[in-house]
Length: 170
Image (tube, rainbow, N blue to C red):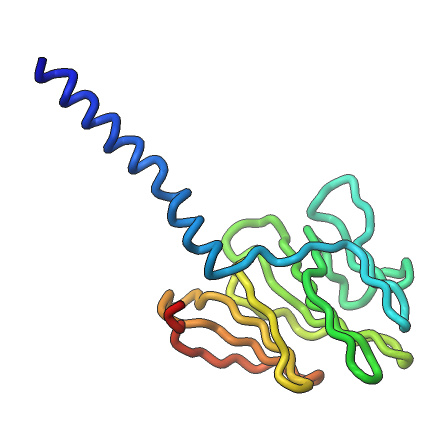
């Protein structure tokens, strides 16, 4: 009867190993919340929206049904937006579907004077937290270089700066 006990032990070990990624993902989800998802954002300065496309990675970001420049093309999402006194700024995620470092982010600001698009930034991760400190918009994401660090991208409306800091224990 030793064979069934060994078999059962191997099955338990196998299941434990097979389910480990799901347990790890669950713990990571608690630390990094699922970002909101929207494809359109109305503002007093126009409507930002993701264009329709037959191929998911060829959608483009539009302002009032006109494609913005520089072109943002891919699987696009508008997870966060901040209303400020004379404008509205949205965080745009763009996944080009090419693997590797396929996801990056842009801040798009719309105002009565038009719009601006920040340079691409990010750590190739869909795990983000977003907040503001005064007029500075901050996106946090796990560091690509060192898992013990957080990459903190700060946007002041003109430039993006990167600050690395240690993860706080939660």
